[in-house]
Length: 399
Image (cartoon, rainbow, N blue to C red; front, side):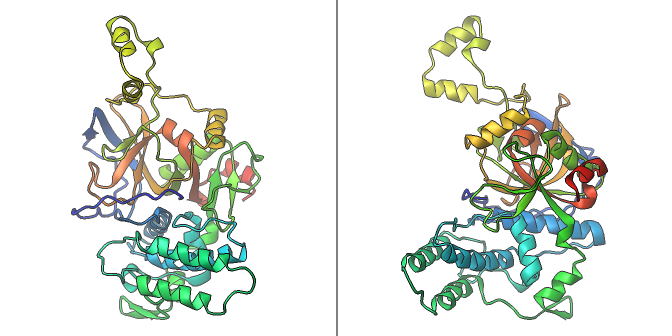
């Protein structure tokens, strides 16, 4: 994701694996009362803290969920193992491309599978990536240092020094730590490759899906966002089919990796929900309400238009509106999360329950509820196990 999103500092403990059973108690805040109707098993909430690496945290959490689903075992994998390798490969491509691609903290959920395939994986305890005097991830210093370094190499025209890659890796080693060739986990010695093989997942089983009309449906294409630096292709399906894939996955016990825009006024992380309400307008008002409206300043009207006090009518999201939002940059590649369940509010409106990576110091301990209109409008892409895709849709996707 290309926006620098900060994790929220917390002191409470992360949640354990969630049960499949319907939740008995309601969650309620800010005028909303949510009732979980379907939960898949999921691993504890993570904390990216002050790092723009949500893509690694969400992708890693997603694969941990898959390991939990398949084996019943909860494994804590290293996010910084993936970040470190991506920084290295991204710098090489940036210089080879003459600085014409994006070099930043952002990335894609698919980068996790990319690293597993090429370099293997390690548990968190074998590679924390915290070698700079902090207890939590803080890349405020590291990120601009890496950017300045690769830009200086790129800006030197002609022949490059034979030392630049070694020097760059030295910076990565200093902040993240040297990459382990072997390590001991639960009494057994592994290499990163052998550990990845022991996890019981095959990255080829995971299908990236999106829904846009500037490319033909059922033909994969590389989403045109800066953080798709590996130029990975996504399967393109109609909007209703992308939603059907998510619903089928959750109904059958699969979590879904989710990349979305979180810049909307209706995205209320602290309050625990994301909605796309219709904006209030003077045309909708009469009498004293209208008289009050016309006296408001433009700033006050904007605040009033975006005020959310509970469930309200939301916008109708069509394929055309979704495309318009993407084309006009109203929908951008902001943030990576994991969808882990379904819920309803007190009016029966449907939501997805989402696990974030901003720690647990929040009303729902690191989870929040996303309305169906928000999902339809603001989803960039999803990643899901191929077995979770309805057979009729999979046939059209040719997978």
